[in-house]
Image 1 (spheres, rainbow, N blue to C red):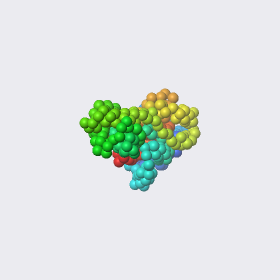
Image 2 (cartoon, rainbow, N blue to C red):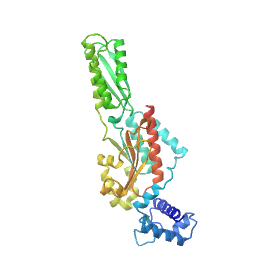
Image 3 (cartoon, rainbow, N blue to C red):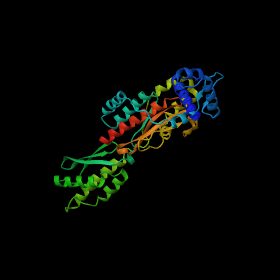
Image 4 (cartoon, rainbow, N blue to C red):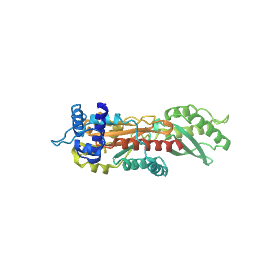
Length: 344
C-alpha cells in the first residue's frame, strides 16, 4: 500500500517537473493531484523517495526533482505505452503515405518524430546488408542493352544499365529473368550475391558460350548493385532547434548533445541495436554508452518490413522529457514506416 502510494507521488513529481520545468513541492502535489492523503503524508513519502535516491533537492528550496533512478522506476512501472489519438494516427498516416521513395520516407520520419516529441529525432537508414531481395526486373532497351532493376525489402530501388556481349532473344531474356529471381528473391544480400554467382556458369540455354557471357554480365551487375551504397552508417537528424527549450541545462545536457549531433557514429551507438517485435527501449542518463552524455536519454525502437528490424529510429534529449508521450510517438512512427516498407 505504501509502495503504491509512493509510486503515485513519484509519478506526480515526474509529470509536474516535465510540465513546469520547476522543482516540485509537497503543497503543489496536493493541489494538483488527487493523491487522497494529507500534505504531511506526502512530505513523508517524498522524504523516503529522496532517501532511496528517486528524487533529489537541487537547491535549498523545498522542491524536488526526479533523479535518473526515479525516471527509470517511472518508465519501468508504465503499464502500457499510451496509444496515439485517432487524430494523431491520421496525421502520421497522411504525412508518411505521401513519401515517394526511401530517402523521402526517412526525411519525413525525422521531421514527424521531432514535431511529435519536440525532441531531436534520429533515423538510421535501413541497413542494406540485412535487407532481402524483393524482386529483380530485366528490361530490354535495345538488342544488346538491358536495364536491370533491383528492388530490396528496405524499399531501395537500384537501376543499372548493362551492355551485353551479344544480342539476347526475348525467350532467353524471360528465362534469364526467371532464373535470376529464383536464385535471389527472398535472400539476404550476401546469400543473394553468392547464389547469383553460382548461377554464372549456367548458360541461358544449350547455345554457345556467349549466352553464358550475357548471364555473367547481368549477374555481376546485380552483385555490384547489391554490394554498392551500403548504408550501415547513414542517418538523418532533425529537430535540433527543440533543444532551445532546455536553456536552463545548456552546459550539462544541451552542449554535449549538440556536439554529438555532428558525430553520426556516436548517434548510432546511442540508438543502439535495432529491436524486433516493436519493443521500445529507453536508456536514461548514465545508462547510455557515453559519460559526457550522462544528462541525455534515448527512446528508440527498430523498424523494418514483416517485423524484421533493419534499422533503428528514435529520439535523444535531456532526461527531463515526456517519456510516455515520446515512447508512444516513437513506436507509432516505427510501425507506420515498417508498414510502408512492407507494402513496397
